[in-house]
Image (cartoon, rainbow, N blue to C red; front, top):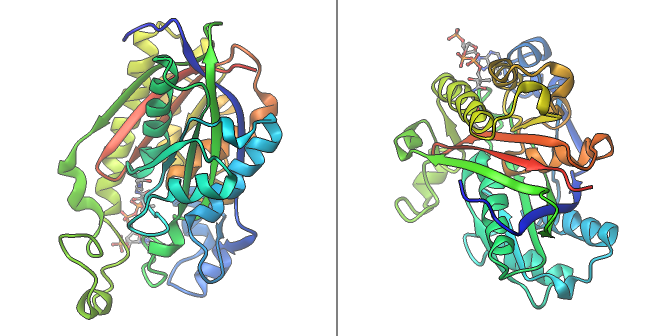
Length: 331
Ligand code: UT7
């Protein structure tokens, strides 16, 4: 772990979800499931869905970034870099980040997408932070957003109950006060690919009448296998980042976990020794928004955060990818 003279501080956060609410009761009319099963197994009660023609992930990202710029009084022309973490880009190319940057007037920024499944926001935050730490950039926006409903099979009860649409964005700026992103452990293992992926629509198996007929353009997940890896990896990496930064459970203001399954979150908190009152949680309202979960949590808990608060962010997702970030809140 390298210490930097300049840290990347989060100096603002905003998030956005679409209006349409898909409840467990509504899902029970679409597939063979129940509110009781979904609540007990995942903690989810409802999720948001982005409706309408030609509405992609950029809609979520643009709303989040516009809110962020207004809130922080930032001139979009001052943004040096915009990173968008997403698994559901508007199109295979160009990058959704390019579309967002253009729409918000960030005409001087370079921008790119980053795909790391549900760990996308942590990868994006860490990547964006590097550009601040080196002094190359002074204002970096990191977006985490997904329109999961675009790749969900609403005839598959094992996946359609989990996912939702939404996202958020943070502004990163240099700090010499010892606050900001202080450490990150990011991991990946492609051996996990068979358990969580989309079978077609990429270069290996381009879209065809056959792939559409075989319903191969949706999330394929072997839930219990993913669950086992998620519980172990997310908890292990969160504990490891505590240990190497000499953090006791009492030193941590909040665990900010990826919201995939309440049981995975509980297991991670328990292994870290952190009580439920210090775990950010909104899975009941939004489900798993992939790259969107962590900024959505930070945004909703923003008014409970104080300058200098120690936060541990942790995630696990497709790839497999996983990781943890240690940051000190800056305001
Ligand atoms: O975010 C990125 C990574 N993704 C994750 O972290 C997700 C990890 N996995 C999970 O969260 C859980 O595995 C699920 C929520 C997807 C599934 O929960 P589970 O407790 O692992 O259930 P299971 O797959 O072991 O299935 C148990 C039973 C099965 O029935 P049988 O074979 O025991 O008769 C399923 O068919 O539950 C059945 N089942 C359902 N029943 C009612 C599966 N989905 C449903 C459903 N409603 N929606």
